Length: 230
Image 1 (tube, one colour):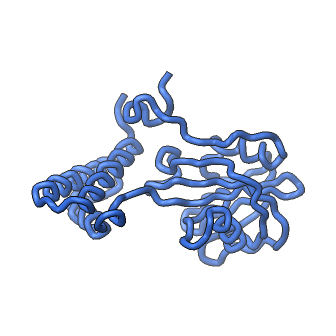
Image 2 (spheres, rainbow, N blue to C red):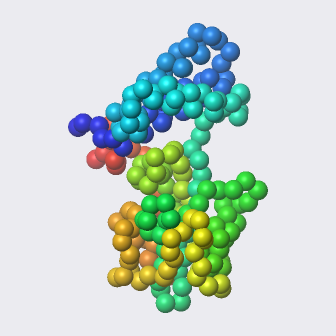
């Protein structure tokens, strides 16, 4: 099976993460040279994946990675953390936002902010993006953004089930082009990844028992990038 652009991107990010972490912990000149060579290989994979339009820009990608290297624990490269909110109302509809940058619809999402718990970030993010005040009911999903194809940045997304308790619809002037409530049979387009979350999202809104959704381990991890092997 030939690797896809998504595979190459995931492998590139994994190699770059390993190399940057190694640079953050080693004082050996020999090891630093080897790790920097791995960064060049990872950047070349980005070119093949279509993430770098011109091969001459490989050096700028490597330089960007190098400038992010910290020392010790600060240099250990990990995925970023984001939160998402499946918000339902008394009519059984879901709250969706249209991203200003892409025009794509999705449930409210945002990066986790320092100083807040994940659930607190959800409350803050939903109100900032949509004007709706929510009560957090529980965790619905823990997802790998790269694996789901939602992002090109290494990211874990914590998706929470919420109930609307107040406020009124008001799209964030910079982040959102539009916001709205939608029933399962009236979802807007283009909608990001609905096939992967629509079932459990509306199940939770209807009050049905929904098991926590999480990415099952692949076997072996690198051979089956798009799902579990039999």
